[in-house]
Image (cartoon, rainbow, N blue to C red):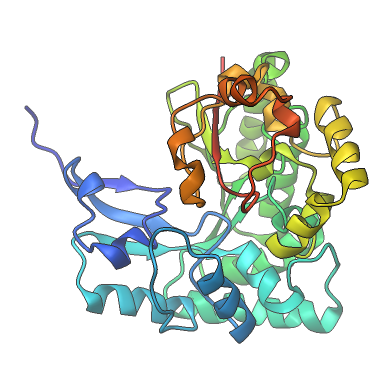
Length: 339
């Protein structure tokens, strides 16, 4: 038994579950008293199209969207009645989608100015800084100067930059250097969210990564990192597909997957090692190391808890040629990610 201050869930995805049940018992019973949101995506700011798509894409938890800005969401949540304290970063992906949609495009100067203004407004509402999650589309479409520009606004307000970096595998060192650059150029402190080395061939990179971080700190930058102390990660199956096929959002992605020629191209790319995108399926080393843990389609829910390899054998298909007959973001993968 121990007496301790409340714990902080610094990477919380209770943004929807607290709407359904404000008690947040899964964390509350573990002693968590603060939920911190906003790793990549945040619950605001939203434009009308974003609200429409968010409602359409809701999974098991259904709710009306009664807010527009991030501050309004946090107020909505607390007035609804919740057990934990809550805080949030503003998602770099959310800011990008607000002005550019979900396609692989670069912002014009005018669009970038509006994105910076959205960050300033969120910081005034109490955001902790900018959060990015760079292996996923459409976040991956953002180039470094764009991230520097919006993070500069957070830095001016005392906020920081947190990032699920552009790579945690084959380009791990380069991704750390990008984070250090964003921090240096924006003037904001930066935190590597879950520092790890995905894929066995990358396990030896940690010493070099630490050297780069310590060198930046020696030059006066506030670069920090956190990690989880287990050898599995959880994500969506979108992290097993190149991001070009996801340009335009979920609906366009599904349309492309119905094209036999595109599917054949995808299978080839998913089988081929590449530094152009983060292929977490290939990084696991085996479909039997990918555990399916969540589905949107009720007909697929009986597959929960099985590995991708098991399902492939059940259906007599290659793991890369399985058809889920539903949204392509139906499952999450659990895979070795550190040594």
